[in-house]
Amino acid sequence: MTYFKKLIEEKDKSILFYHKKKDIKALETVLSELDKEHTALKENLNEIVYLLALIDKHKIKTIRKEAEQPSKHEKEVKKWLQSLKDIFEGFHNTPTKDLNKEEIDFIKLENTKLVEEKGNLERQLKYINNIISKTTVLLTDVRNEFCKKITKGYNIDAVAKKITEKYGDKVVGTYFSGRKEIILFLEKTFKINKIRSKELIDLLEKSKTINFKIDIPENDVFYYYKDYGFADEFVPIIGAWHINV
Image (cartoon, rainbow, N blue to C red; front, top):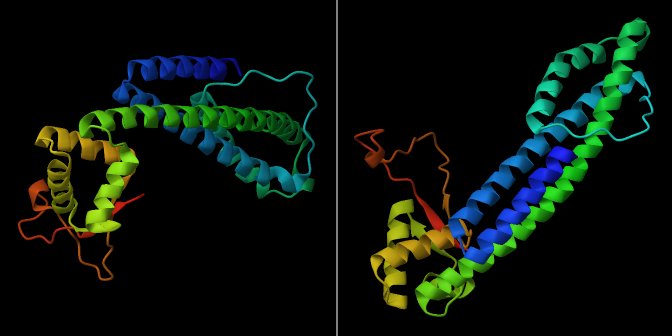
């Protein structure tokens, strides 16, 4: 897992450095990159499980190897898996008795590689889940410090509780009207200016302390934002800002 270990080591150094600098944006970037890497690994693992299931009917054993092979870059793995898909789907639709020796040898070899790569990916996902958790904790810590600086002592949870005291667990309306109402509330409650209140609501949204959910209509009406230029006549998207305390 040479490539992956190097990636994890670099990310670990980065998050410790950015946490020390209290750099929220940099930590958010690292977390976003880790999430993308996690998604790519999970997609490849799902594809391997699918391919192994396709050839399981033939009951062909893997070739025993003495040493674990180094893992490849996720893009290399994805390309390799895509190249196998049509072939393995063809093998799945072919009775075992109709497979020739070359096809059986090919299945043995690729099956062995798939099992090996499956193990690699499972280990990588474990490592990346751990570092995502670590980054999330450190990012939350820095966000709380920034929140306390803006509000003169309130962390993110405390700010959320202030909002629920005023509105309950949600603020009903459009995305923009609800956001505007919360911003005005933050200004008055913490005696801060509009710039600071916007920073605060962005912090709450990015930390998923508040999030907007659309009410999906039961009919086939399309909703558009006029400001986006999709339609002259429009109905604003209705939903609610949910406060997660």
